[in-house]
Image 1 (cartoon, rainbow, N blue to C red):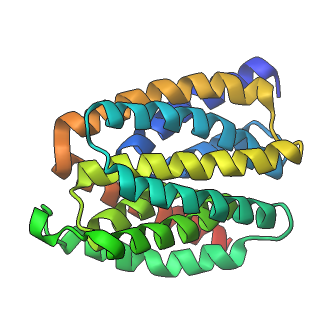
Image 2: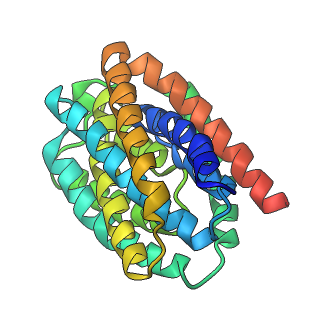
Length: 252
């Protein structure tokens, strides 16, 4: 496939993936297949995707930060553990097939979707987890979801938002901001692993990264302006999309 055709396919899809990811996570559901369409090897698909995602997530996280919609301590704890988890998951990605983990995620997604659909619409301050419990939850979420991000990827931001809302009690906008910080850390750690393995196609990933920045900024601003209900609806749509994609992967 010609390079110009690869870019024509890749960049618009990466923009849309980053836009969705900045709002509700799950951008990898779009970006990984986008890279696969270019015809590059599968491990290079993952490595290249991590480069563009890492740069795009930086832009989205900065937008949330400027709006004051990030809980610094909780997201920092989760991000630190996500670095470790994602690096481990990426090493596994380079060694083994990930179908078993996809099956596990497929089973858990309907439960997550039901909780998101029928949970309370707004989180109040008296329900917000604090202190040691909050940081233990943040650490565990960052580590285990980081492993998943390095190994599989799609849905990482969505799962983080669920942990920060359904378990920790943050509102959806703050949870999305927290998730961007943690997702940046997991993307960065995974990128380093794939870089050292020589599995990054810079000619594709760098132009895609520019599209990812634009998508991340646009999506994060939409989430901040439109608030909790908008994020919740997009979150449910992304969960459904992830369920269909992973189900197709497992069955086929």
